[in-house]
Image 1 (tube, rainbow, N blue to C red):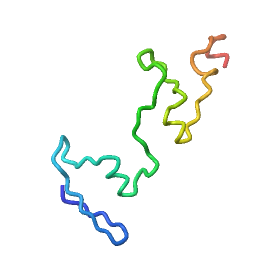
Image 2 (cartoon, one colour):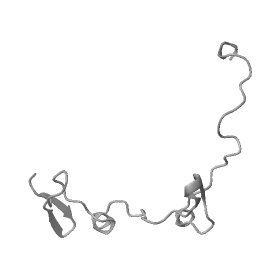
Image 3 (cartoon, one colour):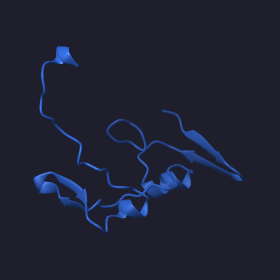
Length: 89
């Protein structure tokens, strides 16, 4: 794969792929953000309540809340009692 030239105002960067499992250079989040990509992304532990028990609710201090994440109301989610047959829908 040939090097790719990435242009920014007054800056030219050449990204040369480093050998890895598929021949492409892997960038860290910081390197990717330096290319003005995913400027508001964050890599962090989401702090699930109890991952071992498949409880994916978030602890109150989860970094997701600082990014504006809102909990989903799960009170009406999941299987429901079956009333009648599909033909009566």
